[in-house]
Length: 367
Ligand code: G3I
Image 1 (spheres, rainbow, N blue to C red):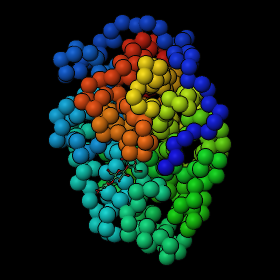
Image 2 (image 1 turned 45 degrees about the vertical axis):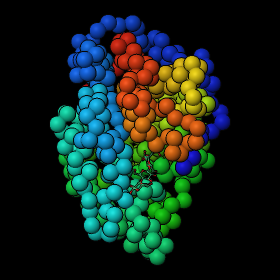
Image 3 (image 1 turned 30 degrees about the vertical axis):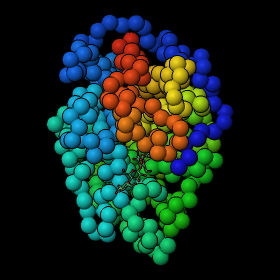
Image 4 (image 1 turned 180 degrees about the vertical axis):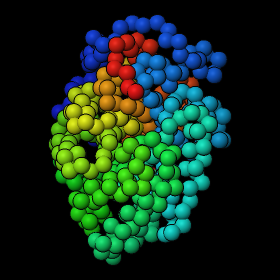
């Protein structure tokens, strides 16, 4: 997968803490509840709630959940929403045709309920992590058969979780960097209307869930964002039931920080919610002082942007511990992208988010 952004990026240096200069002032304690880790610090979720009614989330690695006490304790206390990193994807849910396995996903939903958390469902329509039976069958399917399989998948999975999911990533990563639609099974067999159809089927299955289009690199102005914008605007104008756009926000210190406030506001102006759905900030290893401060800025500025855009209802990091991050497996020589180190000790990135939330004042409150 390519998560390399286009070239016209703001340089990283000197951008930190400009966006919120007006809206944020130094503030004191917010009366938020303390983390159960003996530190006496308020949790991210309590600070975010108190500052702006904002939900703070994390992707969850269900291999850790229930077997790693410290992991559970951080996941349950610091965050107010959770996203399954892998276990609601099609290959996990229907590994064999017609045989569904909701064990791990149900466990996560239970964990969320116990900890008074909302769930972001991820993801229903994607080109990746499809079960092998579908990959093998794909070339032989007609357009009608493909649409029937996709509808059945959306309906079956959303019905299983009906009433338990706050936001669903209905369609994930449908665009190429040049703003054209990504070639995948759905586009090949059904055509561009697969996106509209997916949102309509999703709405039928769970009318109360917020339905999102989710992608990476749309944080930056450019052809990919323009392509997604044109699509989403078209859906809104046709009355297709789409509620929001997710900006994944997988940042890398070498590419600079996007102007997420402007980007999210552009979509919010269509009457949609927005969310940052998969935030992490990777860098080349080992981390130098310069890279550390660039990472802090990546987290701070992306959170500040969400706070400033009233339509931005949640800020989700893509995992919180470096030991479980997807980054080293995909980007050789890069890592340290998360809020906690390999021993689940909070890093400067975590304190950067704490500081943004503690000093947020006068930002719009989401209801
Ligand atoms: O489940 C199999 C296991 O049976 C097998 O033994 C093992 C051997 O490699 O692989 C396991 O599957 C892995 C899966 O994660 C579950 O752990 C896959 O190899 C691995 O490729 C997969 O990676 C996930 C990746 O999506 C796949 O594209 C990452 O954990 C996950 O963080 C990542 O998440 C995506 C979002 O869904 C969409 N946006 C980008 C983001 C990062 O790539």
